[in-house]
Image 1 (cartoon, rainbow, N blue to C red):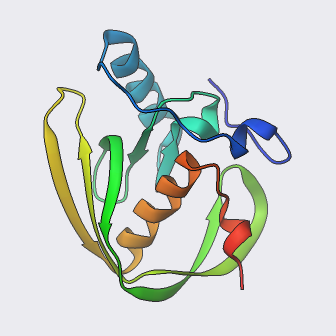
Image 2: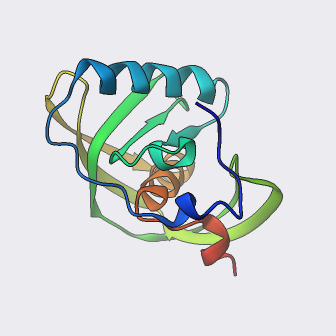
Length: 138
């Protein structure tokens, strides 16, 4: 697994829903957590997988499978991305977000975040939709 960078067209593909959480998917999630290291997040599409899954590490490792954002409110954040090296830009994002997803055990959970953690979740969710933060730079 390696991080894709622009202009790789796979970064623009929309992720596919996960219907069954398999051993392979769990291993892929663990590898993604290893790759993300001290960074904030990584979407499956950034490493060439078409699964609707991302991982975060802003307050400990977390895996989000089939995430859905269910609440928004606006803020501006400065962002960067592992797939767009050397670029930093200001993006308007929701100030608070509620996201529903599944864990690797298949359990559904809801996460509510505000401020920068909310922006991280939205950034990774956008990757699953084939959207890069550079599309939103003001």
